[in-house]
Structures are given as structure tokens and as C-alpha cells.
Length: 272
Image (cartoon, rainbow, N blue to C red):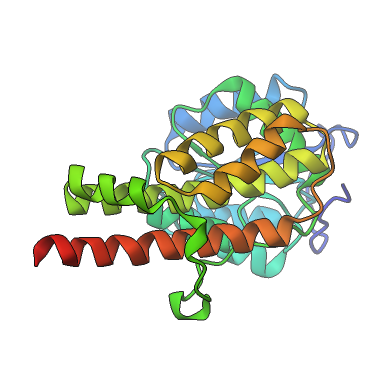
């Protein structure tokens, strides 16, 4: 990957090994910042640190950086705002967001604004190392982002679902609980689909198989037949190039729309 080179500034680079990728880690918590920095340094990367988003932006304007890893919950500029500003100025610079808890709204926004990936604390070392390597090597590649579409833009396709399964779920579960599960699926399925495309591109076929297997299972549990079938096909041949990424995105969009559509109809029938 070609390194992002901001405007030059007077920076002491005597202690920097130019052959090592440079990673900027941003966190207002000193202990978390120190721990993550040491984990990354142990993998032979050069590490820069900043206690908040403003200082991180100043550092990005002073020296080349290959990757930013930032905590979400920070003063001055939180991780999401930092992501927006970084992508506005350095659109090819990969960015990983770290959160202390699962926040679907933050995850959605981070993905749409161009985050390469995200971690939920605690950060596991093996996944950290693998994701950093992928971000540095392939984070500059332009992989289309799945926007969360307006429902009225989608055309009817009722054959996407097992309506019997959808009805059983609507009868068995509390309405709000089921809708929350669907929302969680929607967010994570979009992320997992992008991960499948990315790992297929980088020939990490073990991850392709693992993620497609998981996504096939969660999809069939919600009655999303076609999505599950596509994931099973990918799982069966994880080393086959995926050339229908756009069609898979559209399939997921339509499936989620019709799942919500039929759930609303069923809830109305049950309430009548």
C-alpha cells in the first residue's frame, strides 16, 4: 500500500525506521493506549500515540501514517468525528474504530463513513494482528460501501423468505425483542458481507469459509433463504473468486426489507 503523506513538517524522525509501517493509535485512556501500543509494537510496527482526536489530526498533518486505530469514546473529538475528518482529508488512509460496547448506531455510521474495521473491547491479539496487516496491505482499495437503503427504493420479491419461519418467530417472540434481533442482523450482515469480499480478495479463504458459514446460519434462522443459500455456496468453495459482489449486496438489501415488511404485516394481524 502506498503510504498517506500529509504536508511535510519539522518532525524528528531520527528514531523512526522508515521500513516499518507507521500506526497512529488514539485513546484518551492512558492504560488502554499504553497496552494497545505495546501489542502493536510487538508486531514490529512503528507506533505513534495521541490522547485525543485533535492531537491525532495534528500528527497526521506532520508525518506519514499507514493506519489509524482510534477509540470511539473520547473528549474533544470522538472516534466517529475523527473518522469523518480523517476520511475527508486522507480518504485512502485506513481507519479502525475501537468501542467499549456494542453500539449499532455507531457501527453503522462508522461503516458508512469508511472505517476499514472495528473492534469491541477487549481486543483479541490474533484478530488485531490479522486486521492490521490487511488494513495496511489492502485498506486503500475501494470496496463499495453498502448504504442502509430507503425501503421504498426496493422492488417486491417475496420469494426471498421462508414466510413460515418468519411467522413462527413473530408469534413466539416479543415484538420489540424480535425487531432488535433483526436490527442487529442487518448491521452485522452488511459488515460480514464486506469482510467476505475483502478476505476473498486477499485470499484468506479460511476467513471466507468461517464468516460465510456463520452468516448462512444466522440468515436461515431468520427465514432468509436466498441469503443463506448464497452463503452456503461461498462456504463450499471459499477459494473461488467472488465476482457478484454487487448482486449479493442487493440480495441482502431486498431480503432485509421484505423481512421487515412481512413482520409488520404479521404483527398487525396478531394485534387484530
